[in-house]
Length: 316
Ligand code: G3H
Ligand code: 13P
Ligand code: ZN
Image (cartoon, rainbow, N blue to C red; front, side, top):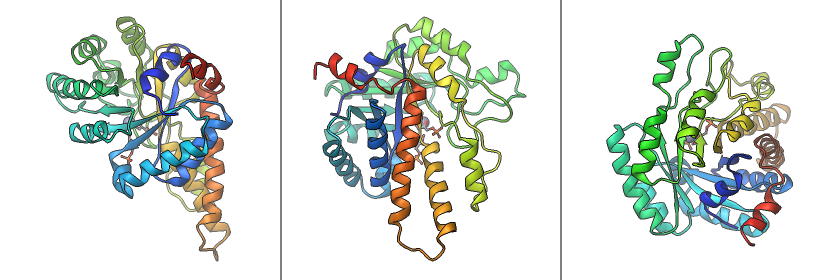
């Protein structure tokens, strides 16, 4: 069942975070649905502009619609990840997306407000939720002074002003994470101080954490042992997911970790089966491994075993 992110956030707020996972193909979709059903968790499917271009946006829609039929108990939102204004409008008009993200965080505050407000007006007219972004995502290095580090983070007063001016439904905040596999140098923690200030100024308002992959070190070691070269990568401490959820983070974005699972499975498979050229055995292993990974994340996010209660609260 496709629902809006707003419906998911209402149930999750302050208790757990909903995993938002990017997908690009059928194997990821199968693993994602399997993992969320086995862990009995609601989830958000994210589709980036790159994913829409990878094969054809209609292909992804068809895959998701089919997965919803194969897994009728699944409760999820279909969300555009990091949309520009034009792509948001396409997705709002498609009748398929239940939620879009307008990412105008690279613009000035006023321009970000203006663009976001236009998208909110169009989306809300069709019952679609909008995530916006304020602040600059980026790795905050251990040796950067606190003041310098904070300059990249979301300003809590601006966040309050931004939400009031745009009417967005959730806000992606920069609290020290960044996209990809190389997030931190040295030991790093999320900026819970900033999160707490934002929560105090925006009580009950759903916050979003991008760049949340944990970059498991055993996964990285296996990839490198099978011919990869991604040494020095580092991600978010998974023990910080739930503390973030308790401070208003209701959506946790994870993409890179899924790519690492894919890379490990395929590198190991073809290393160990050099004569093979059928991609299906490795694809099958990937689906199972990705499902296990997703279920493990849902446990850490606190979204596992929430499905029955969510269904009741939705009156379904
Ligand atoms: O935040 C970006 C996501 O990881 C999606 O990445 O644009 O390469 O599909 P992508
Ligand atoms: P990661 O690169 O940490 O997986 O972040 C994904 C993300 O934020 C998608 O919007
Ligand atoms: Zn992101």
